[in-house]
Image (cartoon, rainbow, N blue to C red; front, top):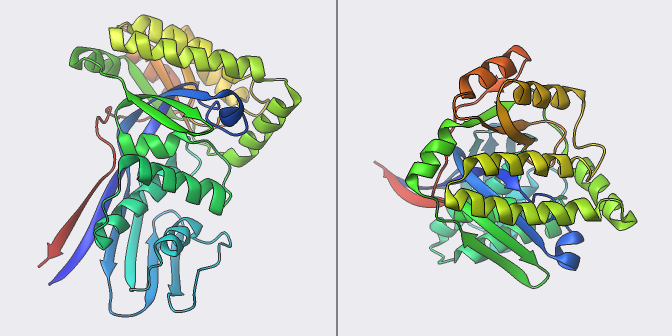
Length: 337
């Protein structure tokens, strides 16, 4: 009878304030982000084996094997997320790992950060470690952004760990996660009026984030970042009060500001999809994540979801069914006997 350990971490929709969680803005001025997790997940399964090696199979990145006898594994661009976690916990016992994410890399739903949260959670289950939510999220951030050096913000790791609707504040000395209590009726109505579509193209978020950081250092996008931070607070209040119309208008205002972060945020295809959605009944929308491609999210007038979806599909976008997910990462163990 073999025991294995599994975890599931939800992907997220960035609703407002995305970009203010990226350094150096977050430390210098404090970032504020409003996001929500959805029922698309990254999964990690760990099966212990009786030899001192790791054998990883990823649906997106292929296969990788390495001995665990030779000290820390080199971070060289090949399965670095897994190697960084293995190094951190000093794992010497052999294991097989299977990774699967329900969103392609570069989709703007926080994929890589959600994967590393799932890996940490599965490893903690395996090693019988009690880690708090903040410890898991902060470790995911440190390993991904500092040890590996992948560019990006902090919201993805915290969203995957905490789950639900959250207003997050990022300071130089820590992160506050405020769970927004949204009434069931509001969630159901927002669900009905939401459209999520895949543009058909992924993007390399590091280039966009690099461009955004350079713009901030030049002082050309600071006002837009300040404004989108305020929108995050206002949108969280609107959703909490059940005012979906105002939330949609905030989404639209947020998108207009986000496009000022960097000239790489939008492109003609994204602009066409956005304009089409607005023409046929979307109140507002945005590209989820850094921008440039991946998924787009819209809030529609109360009776226009079907029409907006149909017209976006005509433009080549792929409509994606989803539900809001109230819970964050979970892990469990199972005997395969």
